[in-house]
Image (cartoon, rainbow, N blue to C red; front, side, top):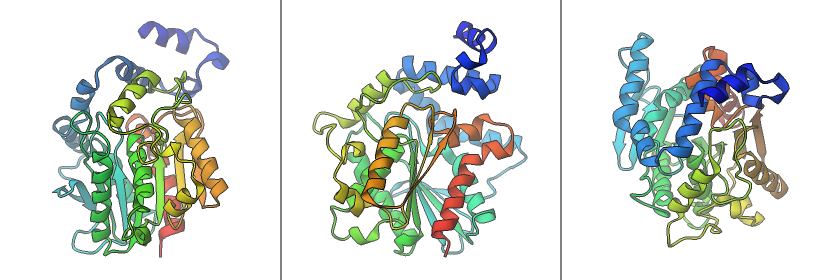
Length: 345
């Protein structure tokens, strides 16, 4: 890995470098290469430890202390039914907007705790720049593979959405659903699933913001790229483990990108539409573009932000790897801007 780093950064012409390496810093390059190696060669059971609450929460508190905060400037607490993290600007008032978030991690690793800084920043921007008076967010902590496989995660995602409806006083127009990677898959599955329940069809959220969605679990289009840290073989393994032995990769609720039923997507689309966010150089970009094209063909409202030369889950990655605030919060600001335009009453 060090030899490849040196060769591409210092002994390769600019035009022959991968799009990400052409613009990234040395620090960003090193981190992404390490993550790429880990994703390809280190078992998910080890990655699960790194992203888990016992590791991620102390890391978050360390980053707070380093920036002069003894406690979080925004109220948050853990929930147990459903499991997750709830945060709100002012806990004494009812929220006027609720974000429902599902974390990524290939269904095999990750936790809401790893995303706390990203999610708190989102709530803060909704207040300071989005014009919302009391934004709230709920991040689901769903069961990972191999402890559970499909449909457990989708059922838990539905339970989490019902919890958000309670927070929003039963007003779905206050809710924006979002998630990255496998979490975005669960959000897509949730929306398709809700149309199967008579009592949920009228409770679809106002807006959906899938970030780097793993739209089709098993797909020949999920191919390695020179820039991205995801590995196609590992994805195939994680996806197969999530599907388990009782489901099919062709099932729309398992793999939403496999659903080509336009009427179903029309029924499942949020009232204010979709905003897809993904990196131009990521493994999932082709399938994300296919889903966006299908939704546009359906006639629903769809917007997208394709970040040039960037990689998987770039809004989250930038928060940790970039130095300038404009870069660190760039992805979140684009999402807040869309939420303000579509959801602010």
